[in-house]
Image (cartoon, rainbow, N blue to C red; front, side, top):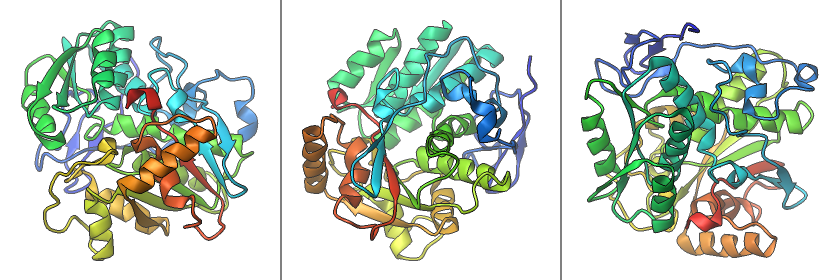
Length: 363
């Protein structure tokens, strides 16, 4: 079996051996990072490789698994002269979460648990359920009450057991974490487990390849728990350290105005969350996270890459969704948040890429 890199806590430095099923820091119970500093392959070396995210083998902590569904390599299409969209809703389970879920499932295959559990507002749970089905691993997904019925149907169709939790996203996470201590259980947490970020970072590796070895002036990503943003930051650091990009792009984070704890902290100049953000109804339920566990890392990454936070109302999201549908792109509300934030020129003419990260049929 391939040796697995150790994990460590970015808050207190506590370390966890690579082969341990531990999913959180043993000291503070916060999320873990991976002790892994790869050197990406140069552009010329990618020709002829497998047409999935596993073509970036040098940048991934696990070898390509037999459970791959061909995830990754999604199209990049122009919306305006300055802004392009990456169509991550064309993944096997119709959301960008496949990028991280396949890596989590590959890790679970190495560790050999009796069962896998996950918690999700829909898309991450669907992705974990699909890849566990592919791997033959029993899976239970905890979801909040109010999760869209189509997402519940998709999770169940993959054979996962559904546990519907009264309350919101945080109540669901608590229920899953309570179950995660059961012996023989692998907690496929897309928030706490750093292997998920190793998968989401391939979003930027693909952009870099498709743009001929460069990146746009700005990357604009939706942020709830921040898994796409933190993965993007990992990839930009790797490409820059390897000399494969001369300049890092600015990193912009988009939140729903109704639930925007990170944007509020940003406006306050804080390094962590400030006060309490109550749960609230929003069409962008996938990013409505009142207390993201990786808040400090998200805020630090946006500062590191000279970006900012943008917020969008449900009215702006609805208008942007109609606009994209009129262009032939049918995307769920959470997935259009970034286009809603920049379509009226918020980036002052700089080039940018936005992800369309969940299919409209899920909503």
